[in-house]
Length: 409
Image 1 (cartoon, rainbow, N blue to C red):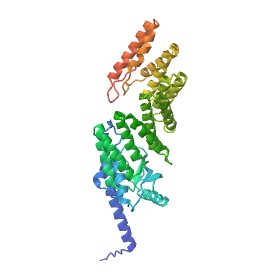
Image 2 (image 1 turned 60 degrees about the vertical axis):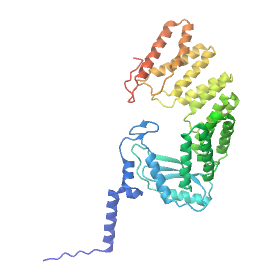
Image 3 (image 1 turned 180 degrees about the vertical axis):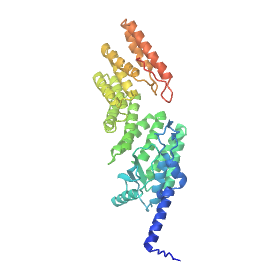
Image 4 (image 1 turned 180 degrees about the horizontal axis):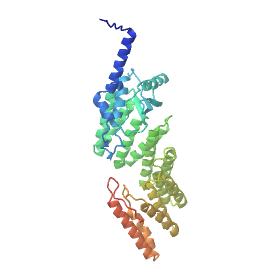
């Protein structure tokens, strides 16, 4: 009888152990990302995601909140806050392969050495878990803050939440406490503090317009004095400038309103989302100030900015057409007014599906009245028929976009 001699060397043992770990990692992938099985399965589920706060649903609109919570937990569980550490705000990009790139310091009260260590640490948190189904190739984390005590941060969030649920006078008290706490945690010119200040300004709108105006300009100066202004801060600045402009319009300070809108528009040239709306608001101010030439030019810029894609006409596109038509009508430039009313009406007719937003049918009343005054009764009747048809198609709108039919047929 032959005997089989098996020799197991240290190298073979090492290979066997490595293979075992590889098999475990393949069968239990959540361990690779420092998470439990339930969290991993929630993040990678192919179930329909739903945003209860905004009502957006669909397989291509994933709910990123669980993923954000996972990233936050992964970072905070590894980061050790040093004594007397100062807040550091970073931005970074998470990629589909789990790597973290484009790490940058956005705001910091810490030393250069601490900033470098923070960047190195964020990079070491890779690989991250797979993205939620339907996500893009990368996810931007525009502002992530290190060196903040989670207990204090939770207290701040609770104050802000309670303020949002309270009546104006109590909300003012809570927001003042939130601003005080946020200034202590982060600093006065950090995004979290400025956001709370914006909320307080909105409360003052109901009770104390002098305090509202003073606080809004304080916010503008805080953001402008920052050495590095992130995209989020830029949009925050635009929102504050818009609040100043609307406050100025309410109090008939139209020159100040014009200045605020122009400042916001300069920022939005870099981040164009929302640009048509601000241009139209500036055009409205020019109309009030009897600067018709500037109003006309600004409305035309809004129309150009609103032509973003060829799917459905945007509300801004339709609104800017109507504002130009109304401007020409009031100036008794009837042929120009009619051309813009026709363009506006044509946009409603060339698409096969109804619109998902409310259409202001009163826009066409001045056009119809103009035709009546010019004794063009047959044309006025035709416009009325088209408007009624658009009303019917809008009322028949369903969430799946059906039924749709072309008014031009």
